[in-house]
Length: 263
Image 1 (cartoon, rainbow, N blue to C red):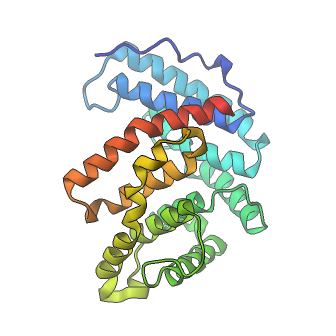
Image 2 (cartoon, rainbow, N blue to C red):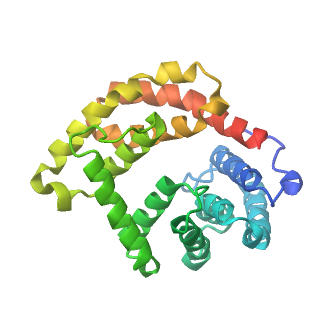
């Protein structure tokens, strides 16, 4: 069992800075894994106790600060909140806590706040609807349905009908591959998704070129590539998936660290 480095001092985290909050949450996740917290009946209890105590302090300080963050900042922090709560208390966070900040960000987004990641919002709403969370009926469901329809129309033939950045293409294709498109494609859904992946795969093949440039400039693209790779698993051979995954895994954690430290 590896020991946990003595870097769980939370006193240096600025809880007015979403990137600092998320950065420490990522650290907690890594250290929980090192401690064996996710192994049933395994792990080192002294190390697990150390991680759990830091996670509980993160929850306490986040709860005290999150209302002062921008809607975008609070939404970003909520992406880590449930995982840290599970580390801290061994159970999910109360949905109402997360929903409050997500829906505040959603309202800001539809009013024109461009700082909110619409792809992350789409993923969150999609997952909430799958859980039959009634908090996302009404405007969130309407936005989700309209957005999915627009993206499907945009990629009706596998390539975008409008000019998009590679990052936007990766994110939209990932979400289309992840979504239930029966309403649009009926029994042709599987063939449509295969065609969509085939048209987008060249962007995965550019991964090595992307990795040659400074990672902090490519963080959104690297995250989008990770999303595409995850969504594309059914369309790749195990060897190809492992090759892409290995290349990303060597870079993405470093990129996240760079992003955290540069903020």
